[in-house]
Image (cartoon, rainbow, N blue to C red):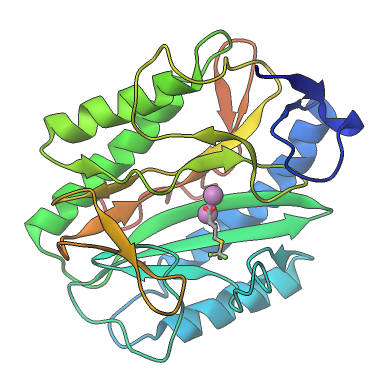
Length: 275
Ligand code: MF3
Ligand code: CO
Ligand code: CO
């Protein structure tokens, strides 16, 4: 059975209950989300051939320090960086390193800042220089998957409606949906109930209610959906080494749909792609 609780009266851990937030909470998490969005905006013209993911990560850390925002991934379950940088066949949780980005790469940069105790979680794909048409198509399909998932959010629908919308579109485009990672409730906790699957059927999962806050973050592959995690314990890659992409927004359920808290103030929600 699913239970829902006023966010303020629930303990500070993921117990499986779904928190319902107030309009004041919405305003507070939106402040965190907008710092994240502005950081991702700043990265748009910093990502280019020759730049290392460590340099990107350092920018994310410094931007946080300048904006009273703590990178949530720092020391999270043993992770030691301020961002995740997932290149080409890396599905998610790529660890920034000293290797330069190369022309034709596509990199997901995933940033979560904590501002006044609230988590703002978002990621975007960044083309590095000129990319192949197949890569550009995957980015377009994946962004469209995220937006179709978001369009399915309204009170009374189930979380499965999000998954169905994403899976239906991805597979019609001959792409596949990664099953091993999902979106998540977010607020004062980084990863909270409910899980938001990016596949499934509209009649599955808990009912969406006004006041819920969660991420939608589909990972879409050009090849098969299967992933493996490398020996570093974090880096998830496609088993067939096919290209993978991801975009992520944090959203809050409103009376008639949802509000996207992590929208780019600069219109750079899909950097490098035609608007
Ligand atoms: N930001 C990721 C997400 O979307 C989580 C990264 S956790 C880390 O949920 F430890 F890998 F950084
Ligand atoms: Co997330
Ligand atoms: Co994220």
